[in-house]
Image 1 (tube, rainbow, N blue to C red):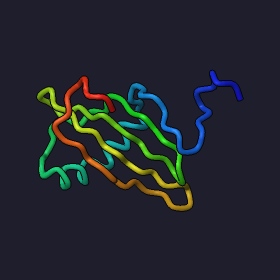
Image 2 (image 1 turned 60 degrees about the horizontal axis):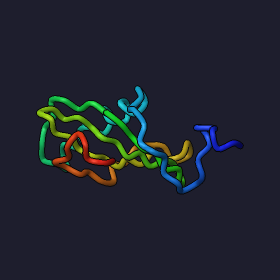
Image 3 (image 1 turned 120 degrees about the vertical axis):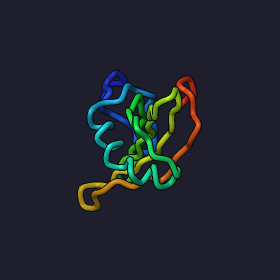
Length: 102
């Protein structure tokens, strides 16, 4: 495969940051309640902005989420392989700004 093939990613290597997609927003929608529980905060806005991904035994998604008021949170969400499906919030970083690197 050529280096220009964006679908090819080495196992364990994280992608560069990309604009959030509907799939990434769907992940955020699914884990919002768990993130709110971990953060101790209810978010009126929970809009995915950008993400990186890392292929492991499943996929780690590193997602920047706009939570309103010019505040952002960074999430690490693990999505299991088809034989072990489901999403797990493995990290939540609060009080991030728009320019904070993901």
